Each structure stands twice: as structure tokens, then as C-alpha cells.
Image (cartoon, rainbow, N blue to C red; front, side, top):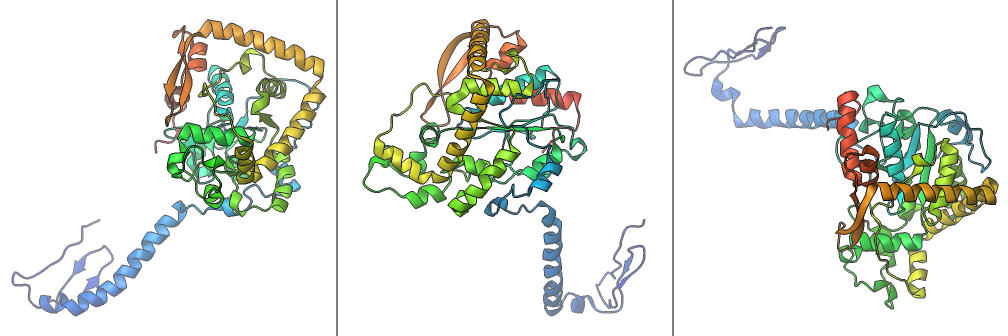
Length: 421
């Protein structure tokens, strides 16, 4: 193909009749150059070209514009659609036959709910068993605050990812599009009293909201602001509902009553942070894993917590009323599952779990140290006793260290499974 050219006389005279030919030749002749470049013609040309240019840019950007789905129910599907998206729910508390270990897992990593310790279980198991992870190009978030979208991951690997365990904002249809149909859906919740206090301590949110540290005990507090405004658009009131993909400020009590049974259908297991060890036993049973598979240490735990006055507790409940309903609902279901598991069986398994955990701790941890978190809050870190032991490394390293390690390995052995940007 020949390049376009413009033929002008040396004195820029007499050019007219712009003619575009088939092979992109442009011949300009006939009218004067001064007339062709007149200000009025340039203005008229600009009125035509500028709107066309803006329209072209808009068409180009449309596929990349993300609509905020948080104003409606992102997981709002009926029972028939649910069966098509994921297999029928088996999480009724009854013991299921354990044919083979489950390796397709979606874990919704809720903020400040001991979720890093649970995530560590999936990262360790997945890497040691050569599973394929759904990972972002960098960091440890796939979306959030925007809901998860399948475009965040590499299309050729849709349906091939085994473990999805990084932070995201839940969007069932999009998650199901990238995970196998046999995927188990798991998450963990925490008492909103402890969750809210933990968030304020870990991220120093009193500074963000311009409030004194004892603001919950003051005569008046900005409840509407605390419910509406989120730190970096991610962290704030009713955090668990927000992580589940909903916009808490737009939910009514009746809507939540409709949503909760739906979430129970979607999630095969909802663990409870205050019942951590029992949660691990139910997880082990659900996944058909061994005791060693579910060993984990509490990552990012704060060594000291602030005690709350009765007034502060009531105000936290008022601010986080949606999360309180969510937690209470699933705590009741959790109690039912523990009872169905069997009191004596649970007691025996808890003893075995704690014995194996003590063994791995003595094997891997040389010491614990206190380091600073993202604010003035301090968190517990582990010093690895055996850096040459891969399991010890996976148990004691920080979250980002483990994810970065797995990401490098996966890019090497599964090219294209992790996007470059």
C-alpha cells in the first residue's frame, strides 16, 4: 500500500477539490492554499471533526467502563438459575461421603475476619498440590471496590482455575464464569463489634473520619457519615455486606431478610471467626482434607485489642445493623452444623487439630515479633525456623510474599494464566 502524499506548489497556490482515492492517495489541486486554510473553514471543520472524535473515543471506551452494580442485588438469581451456575447446595450440616479431596474452591476473603489465616490454608494446599490460582497481575486484589468481573482474569483459562482466594467484591455470575461448575463457595464472618473495632485500630480510621479515639463514647456521633463514607472507597460500616457485593446504605431490613437465605444457598460453608477451630474442622470435613492440610497460623493478628464500653457496643450495632443481621443469621446456621457434626466427634477432632498445630508451630516458628501494620496498629509476624522447608515458608511468610511467590511460579509454568496488567 502506497503512503498518502500531498502535492503542493512551491508557492502554495491554486489548490482545490480534495479527492480521496481508493489507495489512500490524496491529491490537492485547484483552490488556493490560503482559502483552504481559512479560519472559517477550520472552524466549520472543527465542528464536524471534534464530535466525531469524541464519539469514536466513547465507542472505544465502552467495553472498559464498569457499571457500579452495587446498587442492586449482584447475587440476585432464582433457584433455577442457581442450579445452573453452581451445583446444588450440600451445606445442610450433614456429613457427606468423602470420595476425594476437593480442589476447586472460591473463598470470599472478607476484611478483618481472620480471613488471611484461612486464605493461607488455600494458598499452601494449592501450591503444594500444583493447583491453578486466580490471581491479579499485581497485589492481592481482583477488583474491589468495583465488583469482580471476568475480564480481570485471562479468558483462555476461564473454567480452569482451581482456587480463587484473593480479595474481591463478590459477584456470583462473574465468579462462576471463571471457576469450574464443581467449585465450593466458602467465606468467613466475624462479630461486627470486634470487626468494626479491629478496622478502626488496624487502619487508624479515626484519623480518616477526623474523630477522637473515644468518639463512640461521645454524646453525639456522625452515624450517617460513618455509614456512607468509606476509606479508599473500600473500608467502612457493614463491611461484610459490602464485600459480599451489596451497597449497605441502599438495603432495607426486608431486603436483607430476602438476601440471607439466598446467600445460604450460594455458600457451601460460612465460617465464624469467633469459632475458628470449629470452623477449620467443618472446612476439613467439607473439603475431604487432612489435618495437616488445614494447619494455619493467625496472620496479621493484633496483640492487643481495645475494650468497648456498653455505649460504644450499642453504637457499633446501630452503625453496622446490616452486618449484625448477617452475622446472627449465619451464626445460627453454624451452630446447627456443629451440632449435626456431633459433639464428641468435634471434641476429638479439635484435640487432633491442636496437636498437629502445636507440632507445626514448633517445627516452623522460631519466634514471634511485633511489626507495624498500615497505621499505628501493631501486628504479630512469625520468624521462620526453617527457611529451607517450603511448608514452613508458606505458613510463616506474609500474605503478599506468598502471593508474589506463587504468581512468579504460575507465570513460569502456566504462561498466560496471570495477566501482565
